[in-house]
Picture 1 (cartoon, rainbow, N blue to C red):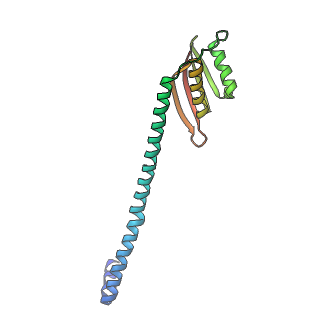
Picture 2 (cartoon, one colour):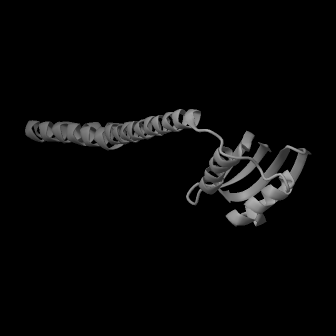
Picture 3 (spheres, one colour):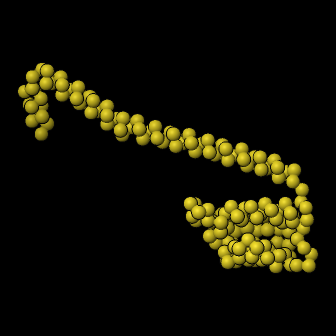
Length: 161
């Protein structure tokens, strides 16, 4: 095959050989652009966009942390209700009671909750609210993302009164 190609090429006139050489160079350059330059360029643009997004998220988290440091607790869990019953009422109010797969009291002031396919943003907003309004803090929070498009996660959290 290689000999046949070489023989064919040598049988061409000088002008045709030059045309084939230039054509091969153009094809080689087009292949390099299509299979090297464009994918590398797209990858770099995606990484730059991801970096900017993460930097923005980091700034937002720092702002939230700064505002949380100046926030004062307004109240506490009502005294006439057990901590577990109060948490149950909170879950019902959020309409996520059916997502609680397990609730385990550690002691009278500590409860561990497992939620499955819970809306992450709703749970995090609720955690911020109960910490600010009632002084209930999440001392441990494990998150496993289940459906990133819809923001659903499996969560295990330990809450302390």
